[in-house]
Image (cartoon, rainbow, N blue to C red; front, side, top):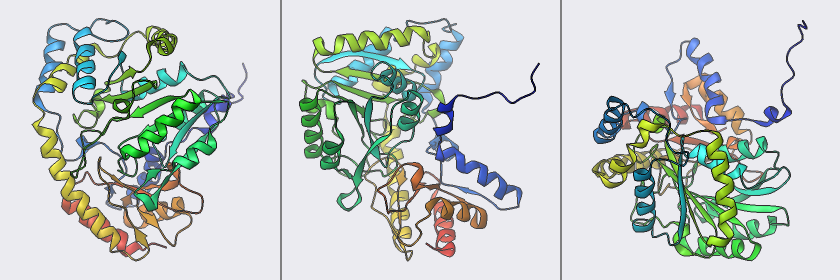
Length: 397
Protein backbone atom coordinates (compact mmCIF):
# COMPACT_ATOMS: atom_id res chain seq x y z
CA UNK A 1 0.00 0.00 0.00
CA UNK A 2 1.29 3.44 -0.93
CA UNK A 3 2.27 5.83 1.85
CA UNK A 4 2.04 8.89 -0.42
CA UNK A 5 -0.44 11.61 0.64
CA UNK A 6 -3.82 11.43 -1.06
CA UNK A 7 -4.07 13.78 -4.03
CA UNK A 8 -7.00 16.10 -3.43
CA UNK A 9 -9.38 17.64 -5.96
CA UNK A 10 -8.13 20.87 -7.53
CA UNK A 11 -11.45 22.55 -6.71
CA UNK A 12 -10.47 22.55 -3.02
CA UNK A 13 -7.53 24.86 -3.70
CA UNK A 14 -9.75 27.90 -4.26
CA UNK A 15 -12.08 27.38 -1.30
CA UNK A 16 -11.59 30.02 1.39
CA UNK A 17 -13.90 31.29 4.09
CA UNK A 18 -12.32 34.30 5.72
CA UNK A 19 -14.85 34.51 8.57
CA UNK A 20 -13.63 31.23 10.03
CA UNK A 21 -10.08 31.28 8.66
CA UNK A 22 -9.17 34.13 11.05
CA UNK A 23 -10.08 31.85 13.97
CA UNK A 24 -6.78 30.02 13.41
CA UNK A 25 -4.93 33.28 14.07
CA UNK A 26 -7.19 33.95 17.06
CA UNK A 27 -6.40 30.58 18.61
CA UNK A 28 -2.69 31.33 18.47
CA UNK A 29 -3.28 34.72 20.10
CA UNK A 30 -5.37 33.11 22.82
CA UNK A 31 -2.68 30.49 23.45
CA UNK A 32 -0.24 33.38 23.91
CA UNK A 33 -2.41 34.72 26.73
CA UNK A 34 -4.52 37.40 25.03
CA UNK A 35 -8.16 37.87 25.96
CA UNK A 36 -10.11 37.76 22.71
CA UNK A 37 -12.99 39.99 21.68
CA UNK A 38 -14.86 38.31 18.84
CA UNK A 39 -16.29 40.58 16.14
CA UNK A 40 -16.00 38.09 13.31
CA UNK A 41 -19.01 35.76 13.13
CA UNK A 42 -22.62 36.81 12.54
CA UNK A 43 -24.07 34.48 15.17
CA UNK A 44 -26.47 36.29 17.53
CA UNK A 45 -26.71 33.33 19.89
CA UNK A 46 -23.10 33.38 21.06
CA UNK A 47 -23.81 36.83 22.50
CA UNK A 48 -26.93 37.94 24.40
CA UNK A 49 -29.63 36.92 21.91
CA UNK A 50 -31.84 33.87 22.49
CA UNK A 51 -34.01 31.79 20.17
CA UNK A 52 -37.69 32.66 20.88
CA UNK A 53 -39.26 30.10 23.26
CA UNK A 54 -42.22 29.25 21.00
CA UNK A 55 -39.79 28.21 18.24
CA UNK A 56 -37.83 26.01 20.64
CA UNK A 57 -41.05 24.52 22.00
CA UNK A 58 -42.30 23.62 18.52
CA UNK A 59 -39.10 21.68 17.80
CA UNK A 60 -39.16 19.97 21.20
CA UNK A 61 -42.79 18.94 20.71
CA UNK A 62 -41.94 17.49 17.30
CA UNK A 63 -39.15 15.45 18.86
CA UNK A 64 -41.42 14.21 21.67
CA UNK A 65 -44.07 13.31 19.08
CA UNK A 66 -41.56 11.18 17.18
CA UNK A 67 -41.55 13.54 14.18
CA UNK A 68 -38.10 12.35 13.17
CA UNK A 69 -38.88 10.38 10.02
CA UNK A 70 -37.95 11.42 6.50
CA UNK A 71 -40.25 14.08 5.05
CA UNK A 72 -41.08 15.03 1.49
CA UNK A 73 -37.89 16.25 -0.18
CA UNK A 74 -39.26 19.76 -0.71
CA UNK A 75 -40.50 20.02 2.90
CA UNK A 76 -43.59 19.69 5.07
CA UNK A 77 -46.78 21.04 3.53
CA UNK A 78 -47.70 23.35 6.47
CA UNK A 79 -44.20 24.86 6.44
CA UNK A 80 -44.31 25.42 2.68
CA UNK A 81 -47.75 27.01 2.89
CA UNK A 82 -46.55 29.40 5.60
CA UNK A 83 -43.50 30.29 3.50
CA UNK A 84 -45.64 30.97 0.43
CA UNK A 85 -48.07 33.06 2.46
CA UNK A 86 -45.25 35.12 3.98
CA UNK A 87 -43.76 35.71 0.53
CA UNK A 88 -47.07 36.85 -0.91
CA UNK A 89 -48.53 38.84 1.99
CA UNK A 90 -45.52 40.33 3.76
CA UNK A 91 -43.07 40.59 0.88
CA UNK A 92 -45.63 41.31 -1.85
CA UNK A 93 -44.24 38.70 -4.22
CA UNK A 94 -46.63 37.91 -7.08
CA UNK A 95 -46.58 34.74 -9.11
CA UNK A 96 -45.03 32.39 -6.56
CA UNK A 97 -44.42 29.15 -8.45
CA UNK A 98 -42.59 26.98 -5.93
CA UNK A 99 -41.11 26.83 -2.45
CA UNK A 100 -38.77 24.37 -0.79
CA UNK A 101 -36.79 24.11 2.43
CA UNK A 102 -33.19 23.15 3.00
CA UNK A 103 -30.62 22.64 5.71
CA UNK A 104 -30.10 26.38 5.97
CA UNK A 105 -30.52 28.91 3.19
CA UNK A 106 -26.98 27.89 2.18
CA UNK A 107 -28.18 24.48 1.00
CA UNK A 108 -31.05 26.08 -0.90
CA UNK A 109 -28.56 28.35 -2.68
CA UNK A 110 -26.34 25.40 -3.52
CA UNK A 111 -29.30 23.45 -4.95
CA UNK A 112 -30.37 26.45 -7.02
CA UNK A 113 -26.88 27.07 -8.43
CA UNK A 114 -26.26 23.37 -9.11
CA UNK A 115 -29.47 23.13 -11.12
CA UNK A 116 -28.72 26.26 -13.14
CA UNK A 117 -25.09 26.44 -14.20
CA UNK A 118 -22.64 24.18 -15.98
CA UNK A 119 -18.87 24.49 -15.65
CA UNK A 120 -17.61 27.65 -17.32
CA UNK A 121 -20.89 29.54 -17.10
CA UNK A 122 -21.12 32.76 -15.11
CA UNK A 123 -23.07 34.14 -12.18
CA UNK A 124 -22.50 37.77 -11.19
CA UNK A 125 -21.94 38.15 -7.45
CA UNK A 126 -21.68 41.33 -5.36
CA UNK A 127 -18.31 42.54 -4.15
CA UNK A 128 -18.23 42.92 -1.22
CA UNK A 129 -20.55 39.99 -0.65
CA UNK A 130 -21.07 36.76 1.25
CA UNK A 131 -18.26 34.33 0.30
CA UNK A 132 -20.59 31.31 0.11
CA UNK A 133 -21.44 32.18 -3.50
CA UNK A 134 -17.88 32.27 -4.80
CA UNK A 135 -17.08 29.06 -2.90
CA UNK A 136 -20.04 27.22 -4.42
CA UNK A 137 -19.36 28.53 -7.91
CA UNK A 138 -15.74 27.47 -7.60
CA UNK A 139 -16.91 23.98 -6.69
CA UNK A 140 -19.13 23.97 -9.79
CA UNK A 141 -16.23 25.03 -12.02
CA UNK A 142 -17.60 28.51 -12.71
CA UNK A 143 -15.35 31.59 -12.97
CA UNK A 144 -15.54 34.33 -10.35
CA UNK A 145 -17.33 37.37 -11.80
CA UNK A 146 -17.77 40.06 -9.14
CA UNK A 147 -19.68 43.28 -9.63
CA UNK A 148 -18.85 46.14 -7.33
CA UNK A 149 -20.89 47.98 -4.74
CA UNK A 150 -20.34 51.74 -4.69
CA UNK A 151 -19.10 52.83 -1.27
CA UNK A 152 -19.58 56.51 -2.13
CA UNK A 153 -23.27 55.79 -2.76
CA UNK A 154 -23.92 53.93 0.48
CA UNK A 155 -22.78 50.60 -0.98
CA UNK A 156 -25.41 50.52 -3.74
CA UNK A 157 -24.79 47.98 -6.55
CA UNK A 158 -22.95 49.57 -9.47
CA UNK A 159 -25.47 48.84 -12.23
CA UNK A 160 -23.10 50.01 -14.99
CA UNK A 161 -20.52 47.50 -13.74
CA UNK A 162 -23.13 44.73 -13.76
CA UNK A 163 -24.15 45.59 -17.32
CA UNK A 164 -20.54 45.63 -18.51
CA UNK A 165 -19.90 42.11 -17.17
CA UNK A 166 -22.90 40.35 -18.71
CA UNK A 167 -22.07 38.18 -21.71
CA UNK A 168 -23.42 35.13 -23.53
CA UNK A 169 -22.25 32.81 -20.72
CA UNK A 170 -23.99 34.71 -17.91
CA UNK A 171 -26.90 32.90 -16.27
CA UNK A 172 -27.77 34.88 -13.13
CA UNK A 173 -27.25 37.96 -10.96
CA UNK A 174 -26.99 37.63 -7.17
CA UNK A 175 -28.39 40.45 -5.01
CA UNK A 176 -27.74 40.24 -1.26
CA UNK A 177 -30.24 42.68 0.24
CA UNK A 178 -29.68 43.66 3.02
CA UNK A 179 -26.05 43.14 2.22
CA UNK A 180 -23.51 41.11 4.14
CA UNK A 181 -20.89 42.50 4.90
CA UNK A 182 -21.87 46.18 4.51
CA UNK A 183 -25.34 46.27 6.10
CA UNK A 184 -26.62 48.34 3.16
CA UNK A 185 -30.09 48.09 1.62
CA UNK A 186 -30.65 48.25 -2.12
CA UNK A 187 -32.78 51.15 -3.32
CA UNK A 188 -35.90 50.35 -5.39
CA UNK A 189 -34.61 52.33 -8.38
CA UNK A 190 -31.43 50.24 -8.37
CA UNK A 191 -33.43 47.01 -8.17
CA UNK A 192 -35.57 48.14 -11.10
CA UNK A 193 -32.42 48.57 -13.19
CA UNK A 194 -31.16 45.12 -12.18
CA UNK A 195 -34.49 43.60 -13.16
CA UNK A 196 -34.32 45.34 -16.52
CA UNK A 197 -30.88 43.81 -17.15
CA UNK A 198 -32.23 40.38 -16.18
CA UNK A 199 -35.20 40.90 -18.47
CA UNK A 200 -33.03 42.01 -21.39
CA UNK A 201 -30.52 39.18 -21.09
CA UNK A 202 -32.83 36.34 -19.93
CA UNK A 203 -31.14 36.00 -16.54
CA UNK A 204 -32.29 34.59 -13.20
CA UNK A 205 -32.08 36.84 -10.14
CA UNK A 206 -30.93 35.29 -6.85
CA UNK A 207 -32.34 37.45 -4.02
CA UNK A 208 -30.64 36.65 -0.72
CA UNK A 209 -32.91 38.35 1.85
CA UNK A 210 -31.99 36.54 5.06
CA UNK A 211 -31.67 39.88 6.94
CA UNK A 212 -34.86 41.48 5.58
CA UNK A 213 -36.56 41.79 8.99
CA UNK A 214 -33.50 43.31 10.70
CA UNK A 215 -33.94 46.86 9.41
CA UNK A 216 -32.45 49.43 11.80
CA UNK A 217 -33.81 52.72 10.45
CA UNK A 218 -37.07 54.04 9.01
CA UNK A 219 -36.52 52.69 5.49
CA UNK A 220 -38.68 49.70 4.58
CA UNK A 221 -37.12 46.62 3.05
CA UNK A 222 -38.48 45.82 -0.41
CA UNK A 223 -38.15 42.39 -1.99
CA UNK A 224 -36.88 42.63 -5.54
CA UNK A 225 -39.31 39.86 -6.56
CA UNK A 226 -42.21 42.16 -5.59
CA UNK A 227 -41.19 44.66 -8.29
CA UNK A 228 -41.73 42.37 -11.29
CA UNK A 229 -43.59 39.17 -12.07
CA UNK A 230 -42.07 38.65 -15.54
CA UNK A 231 -38.50 37.97 -14.34
CA UNK A 232 -37.46 34.65 -12.73
CA UNK A 233 -36.45 35.43 -9.14
CA UNK A 234 -35.34 33.03 -6.41
CA UNK A 235 -35.77 34.54 -2.94
CA UNK A 236 -33.85 32.98 -0.04
CA UNK A 237 -34.61 33.31 3.66
CA UNK A 238 -34.63 31.23 6.84
CA UNK A 239 -34.65 30.92 10.61
CA UNK A 240 -31.00 31.78 11.23
CA UNK A 241 -30.89 35.57 11.62
CA UNK A 242 -34.17 37.33 12.43
CA UNK A 243 -35.46 34.23 14.23
CA UNK A 244 -32.18 33.84 16.12
CA UNK A 245 -31.56 30.20 15.23
CA UNK A 246 -28.42 29.94 13.06
CA UNK A 247 -27.62 26.44 14.30
CA UNK A 248 -31.13 25.20 13.51
CA UNK A 249 -30.02 25.04 9.87
CA UNK A 250 -33.41 25.62 8.30
CA UNK A 251 -33.82 27.91 5.31
CA UNK A 252 -36.00 28.17 2.24
CA UNK A 253 -36.28 29.28 -1.35
CA UNK A 254 -39.31 30.87 -3.03
CA UNK A 255 -39.39 30.86 -6.82
CA UNK A 256 -41.45 33.46 -8.67
CA UNK A 257 -41.87 34.59 -12.26
CA UNK A 258 -43.18 33.16 -15.55
CA UNK A 259 -44.42 29.60 -15.10
CA UNK A 260 -43.42 28.36 -18.56
CA UNK A 261 -39.87 29.62 -18.21
CA UNK A 262 -39.42 28.38 -14.66
CA UNK A 263 -40.91 24.89 -14.83
CA UNK A 264 -37.81 23.05 -16.21
CA UNK A 265 -35.61 24.85 -13.67
CA UNK A 266 -37.94 24.00 -10.78
CA UNK A 267 -37.99 20.35 -11.88
CA UNK A 268 -34.18 20.31 -11.99
CA UNK A 269 -33.93 21.75 -8.46
CA UNK A 270 -36.32 19.11 -7.18
CA UNK A 271 -34.07 16.38 -8.60
CA UNK A 272 -31.26 17.66 -6.38
CA UNK A 273 -33.67 17.90 -3.43
CA UNK A 274 -34.72 14.27 -3.84
CA UNK A 275 -31.10 13.14 -4.09
CA UNK A 276 -30.30 14.59 -0.65
CA UNK A 277 -33.53 13.18 0.92
CA UNK A 278 -34.84 16.03 3.12
CA UNK A 279 -34.14 18.85 5.55
CA UNK A 280 -34.41 18.29 9.31
CA UNK A 281 -37.93 17.06 10.03
CA UNK A 282 -38.39 18.32 13.62
CA UNK A 283 -36.96 21.77 12.84
CA UNK A 284 -39.43 22.21 9.99
CA UNK A 285 -42.15 22.29 12.65
CA UNK A 286 -40.74 25.65 13.77
CA UNK A 287 -41.53 27.39 10.47
CA UNK A 288 -45.26 27.95 11.05
CA UNK A 289 -44.89 29.35 14.60
CA UNK A 290 -41.97 31.51 13.44
CA UNK A 291 -43.76 33.04 10.46
CA UNK A 292 -47.27 33.16 11.92
CA UNK A 293 -46.65 33.40 15.67
CA UNK A 294 -45.26 36.01 18.04
CA UNK A 295 -42.50 38.11 16.43
CA UNK A 296 -42.08 40.71 19.15
CA UNK A 297 -38.48 39.58 19.63
CA UNK A 298 -37.57 41.16 16.28
CA UNK A 299 -38.39 44.71 17.34
CA UNK A 300 -36.54 44.17 20.61
CA UNK A 301 -33.49 42.79 18.78
CA UNK A 302 -33.51 45.66 16.29
CA UNK A 303 -33.60 48.16 19.17
CA UNK A 304 -30.47 46.66 20.69
CA UNK A 305 -28.76 46.41 17.30
CA UNK A 306 -29.57 50.04 16.51
CA UNK A 307 -27.80 51.20 19.68
CA UNK A 308 -24.81 48.95 18.98
CA UNK A 309 -24.68 50.10 15.35
CA UNK A 310 -24.54 53.72 16.49
CA UNK A 311 -21.67 52.98 18.90
CA UNK A 312 -19.83 51.14 16.14
CA UNK A 313 -20.14 53.89 13.56
CA UNK A 314 -19.34 56.69 16.02
CA UNK A 315 -16.24 55.04 17.50
CA UNK A 316 -14.83 53.77 14.19
CA UNK A 317 -15.29 57.10 12.43
CA UNK A 318 -13.46 58.78 15.32
CA UNK A 319 -10.29 56.79 14.53
CA UNK A 320 -7.86 58.58 12.24
CA UNK A 321 -7.49 56.59 9.02
CA UNK A 322 -10.77 54.66 9.32
CA UNK A 323 -14.11 55.61 7.77
CA UNK A 324 -17.37 53.69 8.08
CA UNK A 325 -20.61 53.99 6.12
CA UNK A 326 -23.49 53.55 8.57
CA UNK A 327 -25.22 50.18 8.07
CA UNK A 328 -28.99 50.33 7.51
CA UNK A 329 -29.77 46.72 8.40
CA UNK A 330 -28.39 43.40 9.66
CA UNK A 331 -25.51 43.50 12.16
CA UNK A 332 -22.37 44.15 10.13
CA UNK A 333 -20.20 47.15 9.35
CA UNK A 334 -17.52 47.30 6.66
CA UNK A 335 -15.10 50.12 7.60
CA UNK A 336 -12.47 51.38 5.19
CA UNK A 337 -8.76 51.45 6.02
CA UNK A 338 -7.38 54.60 4.40
CA UNK A 339 -3.69 53.86 5.03
CA UNK A 340 -3.39 50.06 5.26
CA UNK A 341 -3.35 48.50 1.76
CA UNK A 342 -2.85 44.98 3.17
CA UNK A 343 -6.11 44.49 5.06
CA UNK A 344 -5.41 40.82 5.80
CA UNK A 345 -2.06 41.68 7.36
CA UNK A 346 -3.68 44.49 9.32
CA UNK A 347 -6.38 42.20 10.70
CA UNK A 348 -3.89 39.50 11.66
CA UNK A 349 -1.81 42.11 13.48
CA UNK A 350 -4.91 43.40 15.26
CA UNK A 351 -5.76 39.91 16.46
CA UNK A 352 -2.21 39.04 17.50
CA UNK A 353 -1.47 42.30 19.34
CA UNK A 354 -4.86 43.43 20.68
CA UNK A 355 -7.05 40.30 20.63
CA UNK A 356 -9.82 41.90 18.54
CA UNK A 357 -11.03 39.31 16.03
CA UNK A 358 -12.30 41.04 12.89
CA UNK A 359 -12.28 39.80 9.27
CA UNK A 360 -10.24 41.25 6.42
CA UNK A 361 -12.30 42.91 3.71
CA UNK A 362 -10.55 41.04 0.91
CA UNK A 363 -12.25 37.90 2.24
CA UNK A 364 -15.56 39.36 1.03
CA UNK A 365 -14.28 41.08 -2.11
CA UNK A 366 -13.72 44.79 -2.58
CA UNK A 367 -12.94 47.23 -5.34
CA UNK A 368 -9.25 47.02 -6.35
CA UNK A 369 -7.13 49.59 -4.60
CA UNK A 370 -9.33 49.72 -1.50
CA UNK A 371 -8.86 48.09 1.88
CA UNK A 372 -11.54 47.22 4.48
CA UNK A 373 -12.39 45.01 7.42
CA UNK A 374 -15.69 43.62 8.66
CA UNK A 375 -17.00 43.74 12.21
CA UNK A 376 -20.22 42.44 13.71
CA UNK A 377 -21.95 44.66 16.26
CA UNK A 378 -23.78 41.83 18.01
CA UNK A 379 -21.75 41.91 21.26
CA UNK A 380 -23.00 43.95 24.24
CA UNK A 381 -22.14 47.65 24.30
CA UNK A 382 -19.31 47.34 26.84
CA UNK A 383 -17.58 44.71 24.71
CA UNK A 384 -17.94 46.83 21.58
CA UNK A 385 -16.53 49.90 23.33
CA UNK A 386 -13.56 47.91 24.57
CA UNK A 387 -12.94 46.38 21.14
CA UNK A 388 -13.07 49.71 19.30
CA UNK A 389 -10.80 51.29 21.93
CA UNK A 390 -8.28 48.52 21.20
CA UNK A 391 -8.59 49.21 17.47
CA UNK A 392 -7.92 52.91 18.13
CA UNK A 393 -4.79 51.96 20.11
CA UNK A 394 -3.63 49.64 17.33
CA UNK A 395 -4.12 52.33 14.70
CA UNK A 396 -5.20 52.26 11.07
CA UNK A 397 -1.80 51.64 9.53
